[in-house]
Image 1: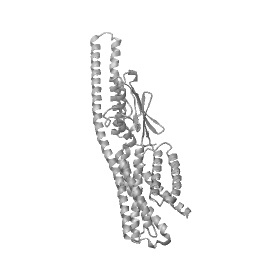
Image 2: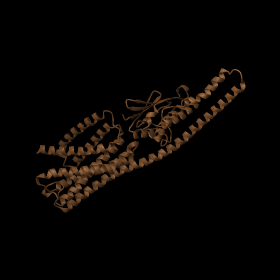
Image 3: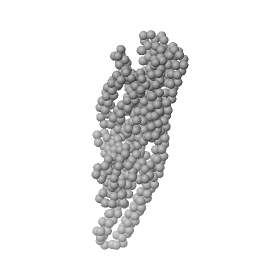
Image 4: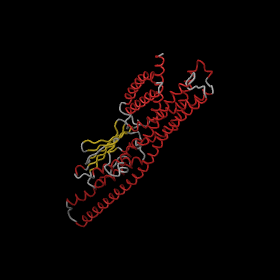
Length: 455
């Protein structure tokens, strides 16, 4: 008897985990996988299954009590959430959001099935199944589950996870969602234990209409709670997305103003140099005789501004880098660039301009604060290596640089708009399935971007 109960509860827990991990798979498709992903996935899964077998012993003795069920399923949720966090290079907040959504979807699927199954029991739809009852039950359940998975993915999961790209989530709504989910788990545990005792012959089969109505009311309430959790998560993501769009527009305005200042400064520099060249050429024409070497050197220095022209093989990138080079020339900044721009054709013009514009502007802002001329240096490299496009940028900086969520934290007071450049870079890199990292070593800031190339 004990072995039969143990086997049954182990099967129940493993089925629960299988259903939950299907939804985990769907909600984490857009997340960044960690190193040794396969090892962490299967190693962690083996540990989760082992714990589930251990909990089945506890389930034998406490599974028919409310708090026993709450403890079992709460522990499995915490354990599986930790496993997902181990597998993905994401913050706990992002992982908790995804796992909460998956758990809500799993519970929603289960409660929807119970609603329709209890309705079928009330109308005696399953009386003629005889010895094939278990087989027919499994066929109906798994078919129902597959249909709900497909509907959930296209109606909810795909739209919500598409908004995860900025990795910026709201703690308040997360807490509310967790509270609602917790209440749902507690109420479901009370329902399952209470109505299991009232069932006649089979679970969820009642000989009293009032019991059926109460059971269906509980199922409907649980479904409503799960929908509330999913709605809160989706609304949070949409609101955050709208906020990011407003921030992006403000950032675009600020960047346009800065670009205007750089362009104006570049034009002023060209005008000054052209005036100098004109004056020196006139001086040569009017002076006659032998031209002094110092005048020739001065003229060559004025003409050397045109050496700032950059040729990368990408016209848009050439224009951007040439303009930045001219700005650096005027402001005493050493800008070194080696770029294979021809391999950047997979980026749209807007993303290309925004990506490299932000990379260089952030570096310009950092080196402009440095007094020592020899440290006012920016290096940029774009190269292909082993079917990967690598963008490397480094520059000196002064002060203390702190990081949050893998990005340097701005020291400016208006943090909503300043520091958005780095987030814009990351958003663009993730849009093209690239990897983006920043770090400091000594007094040098390093930025690395890696894109995979087809073939």
